[in-house]
Amino acid sequence: MSDWKARLGVVYSTNPDFNYDNGEAEEVATLPKQQQKLRVWRDTHGRGGKVATVVRGFVGSEADLDELSKLLKRKIGVGGSAKDGEIIIQGENRDRVLNILLAEGYSQTKKV
Image (cartoon, rainbow, N blue to C red; front, side):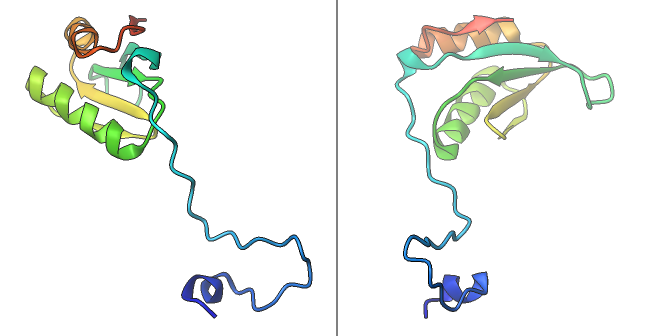
């Protein structure tokens, strides 16, 4: 028996349609830049009143999301993070983020 089956605690199933679920999510294919519908928000919730710029709507892998996050943080010169399908950039940078995304080819990007 392979390791992941042992961790699930399933030894044998009599159901012919049974599929082992190892808990790994399928990796989502990243849409082309022209098809990404990104929205740039200003947010203060849960940040102690500090302003952050949030980019939502990215459809793709976590690696591609991290790559876009690194590009934005490097070009603006601030910190931030990428998690849960969102890119969080420190400070009020909606206009700068929007201009960078449009210049990179994300043509369906809007400021909210």
